[in-house]
Image (cartoon, rainbow, N blue to C red; front, side, top):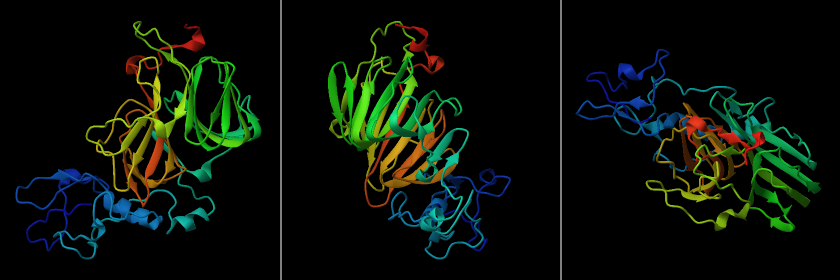
Length: 363
């Protein structure tokens, strides 16, 4: 954490204001910096130094990103040196071991976490099961209404040779993104090839087939379509397909990441899919808090994700669920670009999030 303000005559001992110390003695993110005005600032990275230390032990490289030099070696007087021995140890929860390689070989170890308002699901926790109506394919579900207040699903479908997908239930819309391999969509007399980085949106009740001759891994989001509450919106979503990399980069004032949206930003669509790129050291400027729910698949790179009061080292292959109103923030680390694909609720008043379902016969 940032350097703490010293109390005169305390021999360089660090201290925090009483309001910044919890009953259990663990410091919060708000700490005092050296200065003559007696002011107290909140550190923009909160428990960064603890996260940095723990993350190095997990084998993820920081490379000086997201906060500059290693603050673990900063005294209370702001000079480089050994860490203050009186500082409380980092907060650690769950199973812990010295390195990620060691942890992966430890029976029972997983980075997967499930909380009331978020979840991190790592590859060693994937459970593959059959998918209703699919042929020669299995799926691993990460997000579903079985979670608290969640109204969509996110899963990976692993298609084998000569495989085929089943239709979603009545009233359910589907988004497909190809992670590995090749597939094709057949609908309305057309065959549309899908390769890695290709995607397709299938509106509810549209007859279609998804097939793969040589195998594919698909990232899929589904939800019961929510008819707009406003009577002014008479349009219905249409079938779309495209290539993520070819979509235009959109302006994001105050941010440095690269943003592409894969679906139209028009009111007939009740969710959107974002593809977001971060170079090492880039991070979200806004510490987000909103009613929109997310699912996220990290496609490339590694970094730190803050969810609520927890800080998680993440890497390609990890899946995150973010419930409504969970504070969230990301910083890319390592030596290569981070890219993730993210589901986001859109264009619906939170008072009427579910609207009128097409399952109930809406036109």
